[in-house]
Length: 429
Image (cartoon, rainbow, N blue to C red; front, side, top):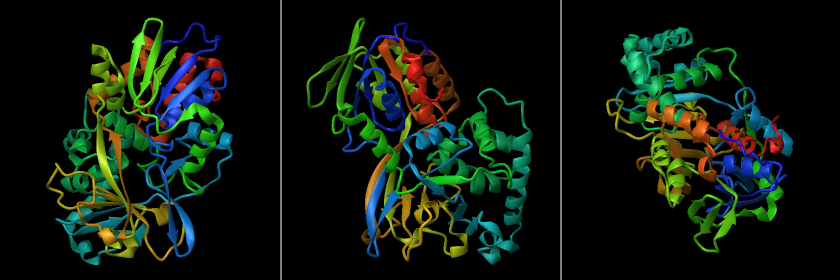
């Protein structure tokens, strides 16, 4: 990543996008430079999106995008929360799978979760699945020689692991964690998968990091950053285009006057960044185009029918497989916010992705659409080049897609840009 030679001079900087990456970059840079941050939505936050609902006479703040983090693998985000004085509490991270084709259901919430359907204990295929989870964990902890461009689907089948493991454990887990389709999960880069599972303790029962959630919803930390930025943050201000010249950058809002800046930080999704550039070069088209985004429809609702039939199998994350033979299907999953955000209620508050019409319309509280990055071996190569070449043509790319796609990666990407422009503004040093 190229660094500015005159970082001691006060610069005029535009940041486009007020998700966690853009907010982190803008907040740090504003301590030493003149910053304007553009956001098309009514409020900042991106995937940190909190909805307030009434529940039996009390107000609840429900997170429907970013919900949980842990201090071990989110060190920068943890420091950001501490810096802002944001209160957090323990969360629960458990996972269930139910398959309509195979009449299978299990949950990782102890023995009762694994035995929630007693009749499946008579099936050899179910015991083979449980056995192969252990086999896979041993294999994943020990494998070191990875073929270039290896994908999850091809690698585990080459290792002799069963189809039950692939269809009812690995693909659901991968699809759920990265909000990807089943087909994308099959083609997921093996090295990224293994690194993530090892770092998060997902290959062993013990030594898993405890997860936490923001008290009052993730919007709490966003509100703190928005207050610090004040009028520098311009919500409801979508950008129509970005023009780069040798001596500066012009940012033109959809409704407003064009403004001149020294540099621009595009803290948006890759496809959005590409669409904003008036004159993208071949390098930008290639690298940004190699990391596409996929949209997922989200419903906030109270329909318990999308959860496993047995309450013993209810988990924080509940993955639904209508037909495990169909690899073209989108992700279908339900987050149970009562468990994730640790509150008691007579109603299950759920966030379901791509429900396929299963959720009763009279129980829907909110409809949204979020997009998530799709990773591939080619995309990982593009990501490394974007990191190394960031800052060319007065343009910095900034987003969680430059890491694993999570909140920690957004904070890290924001601080990487800060260090490239002005290392003295980096609070993480």
